[in-house]
Length: 345
Image (cartoon, rainbow, N blue to C red; front, top):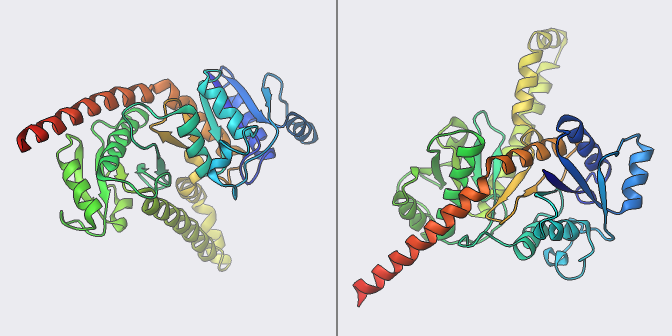
């Protein structure tokens, strides 16, 4: 498998990206790794930090898309950026997947325009695994600020396929994020989405309130990207807050410090559970070739985990499953629309 990694994007680029790729190569040596970035900067950084890049190809690029750049930079003014060059190489078949910790809007825009969506899929979505006790896939977690009920339904199908393949869950439970559990709760988008999901054939469990999500009520949680991104960051922030409060409690005095020694393994397990970096990156489901968005603040371990997730994503053939669904879904929608028109006539 040939994996492209954007070496220049992200808060800790290029050092942590390079370190992460080196870790991945050591752990998964059977794959080919290609760092996309300024060749001199990448090489100098590796040498200064004693990182062995033997066997890792460097694809030269000139500019960098920053977190503040307009998403259209990837198409217009920065066609020579590491993100643009990587996406073009993926689109032409020079690699099997692309990983970037860069500007989310630019990555989504570039992936949609350069790599293209799967035919029949109206919107690509960011699929983020929430750092909770049981894995919950959030669709969409930031790609689309406004959506239709049909988009929500497609998110649900793609998310269900993902959880089925990645986590081996038979008939994943799908929940619709809402401000109440009653069927008529929410604005017109939620009400329309509820009905579509009810008739979808998926294992739809109904509306799910935010407070219920950590308690294993669903495997896939669908919503628009604006609400989803706020919910995701709230969960991540609350996890960090609770861990900091736990640390404060456990280091209050000599008694609590001694008690902590007996709970070391459980504390590490809890920290691991709430660490978003342990889940790797978030795939852009609906794009024709695998594109993985790593967290902007990713360190080397998070990048390694994003690559691990990328390998699993490609090997499980999720995109082929989504392509088959999209074709079937499109045909069903055409037939449903034709029947509706016939009835009206």
